[in-house]
Length: 40
Image 1: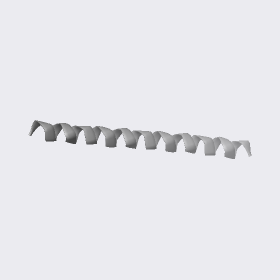
Image 2 (image 1 turned 30 degrees about the horizontal axis):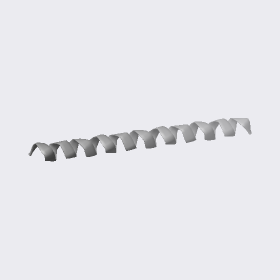
Image 3 (image 1 turned 180 degrees about the horizontal axis):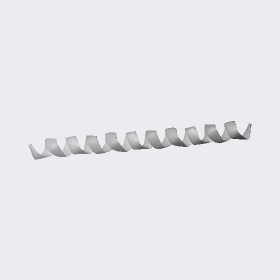
C-alpha cells in the first residue's frame, strides 16, 4: 500500500509541475503578444 501511495504522490507532484509550467508558458506568450502589439 505504501508503494501505491508513493506513486500517487509522485504523479500528483508531476501533474502540478506540468500545470505550473504550462501556466508560465501561457503567461509568457501572453506578455510577448501584448508587447508586440504595443510596438506596432
